Length: 81
Image (cartoon, rainbow, N blue to C red):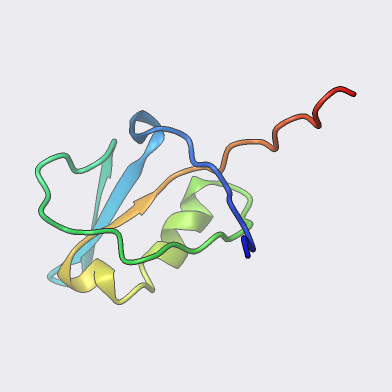
């Protein structure tokens, strides 16, 4: 049973964030040189990228790996009948 299937904007729309030495390290775009695997995703509704990064900073993986923030694609139009 499919529960949810949100599409994400492509990697070019990503912002990658890490916490290093207690400080945020934010980069535009995906972190291409990675050996990490997708461990899941969260969909949160926020007003802007800054609010999304505030939430991303709370993710445990921000301390040891990275968190990639991407916008969700708008819903597809209903099929024409």
